[in-house]
Image 1 (cartoon, one colour):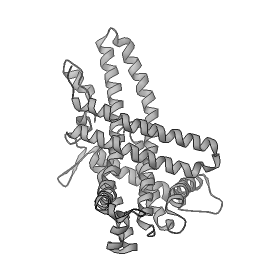
Image 2 (cartoon, chains in turn orange, red):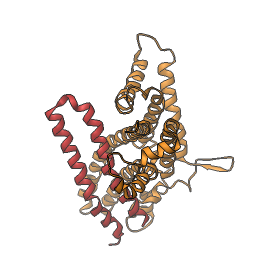
Image 3 (cartoon, each protein chain N blue to C red):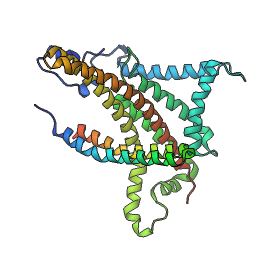
Image 4 (spheres, each protein chain N blue to C red):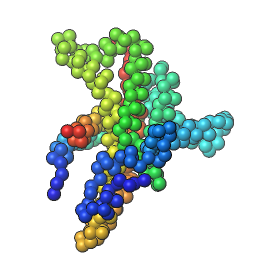
Length: 268
Length: 67
């Protein structure tokens, strides 16, 4: 699967070829074709992630009992964590209930897809492909704007999002376009890019340290010291990546909840 | 030695968000040290601030690859 990563390229050429965006391009090595459409590894992972999340929660709550079993307990703890620390604390106890299914599904879908970066034999974060992250941010954009327009009406919602409160009207010509730009246009872009760039940079760093370590050992000399050191660092970075994977899933869901609560806020 | 000047630019641009994120978590830690029971509220505020400061670094890395 890793035909285009630096490891094979370094073996073919004379010098070390640093990994780059090409290491994330699977379009030349599709897994199979489906109706003329080439299906690549990230696409399969995306579906696999959704299936795993569904299967876990389905299995956990299929036979829900008052005294929970081990699986149901794990499911309830996972559900309750997102429900309480993201849903209730951010959106507020009045409106949060109907958004909890979306937030829980989103959080665990992101978590499993990010965790694919560290799961042996998969080892590729799905959202290091920018298009996947854009699609997810687009969904969240539709949801928070839809919720806001549903509650305040189109004009009221635009006013809520783009007219800051407690500012003298003299400043409006300056602030209104800025607020509109920031709240409606830039939000989905930063939401998607944050997830994408973190996953991309982390995976790139891992490729760099592991293939670079191999190259240094093959190079000999000081490489016998530097190569294993690079591999030790790669292991350390893997643990850092585990933290980042969780944090990015959490931040993405938290910001979704925050945007929804901003769209639902009463006018001041 | 070849490379892209964009990456040096990105390194410089990342200083700002780096300092910002450090300040945010410093404030969060001292807030929790003074008032441990407020951790739940402070945590989501700190993560929001972290996300906003990080957005600058992300815009930077996007531009470093695009430009």
